[in-house]
Length: 369
Image (cartoon, rainbow, N blue to C red; front, top):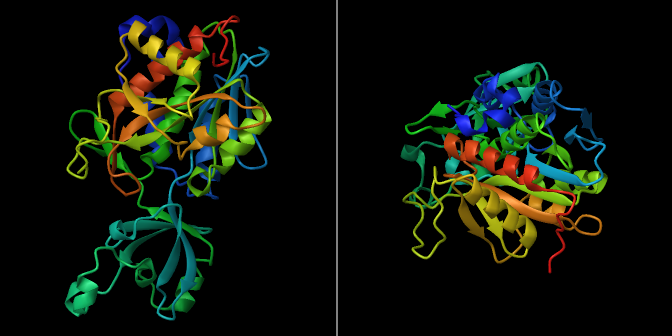
């Protein structure tokens, strides 16, 4: 469970009256493949309306939640709500569904997966099928990754006629949603990228809603990050923030899949990552690190020598430029149906961002010098 330290009860009056885990699980159990984010955005709006001054949805689908909105200086926290998935592109005469990827699907993780087709008439459970190994040719067995063109969804119908009564071309699908609890406060499931970041953004705003801020704070549930950082681009243009923080998952190195001994260490449970490099404003970085040290919040360095592949990239170069940074939540097995994150890292990311926002005064200058 997410835990709240006694030292911070004075700034978490709203949060302490509720169970944040329920909100997180609601997000993770609600489908949101890129371009089909409406169900999860309804969850966000319903959850945040009780603490926000404003809750708006733009024409792109971003949900923008604001507090202290009369302040001139604006801070934007962004977590994208969309997840990778599939789209039905063909129905065979036997009623099997062939799909194309939505976002960065790894075909090697698809075969044998349980999936859900989100059809107009309601969700349909299915499984990803392929030719069994007994019938594969030697060259097929030797392939390290399956070809998505040779994998299909089986929903159990008899033929195309029955399938077409249930499914339309263009319907989205996801891995079967759910949350699996592991040891040591770790959770696993599809869509942690980036519903954990979305959760952190909204939970930070909730805590800040009981504080006296010097800035207007906006938490944005952005859309279509997985297909090109599209929602963050339009939301940042609309809000025109002075400061923008993208909150996303980052690759954990504490598993056997990390075969690079010179990789930057990133461990689950050791705190969120704080970005450094060309995509990071040095003043924002300094304030984040200072807040972490002052309040004894564990964090990990997240250096990147190139622009990041998440919402921070789009936010930084909006309009005349934004003082940007990224908070990275360590994640194992990214873009699979068993992504793993630490609840402790989520809690510490919220704590860090809450203190960061509170530290901004009317005299804070984010201009690099």
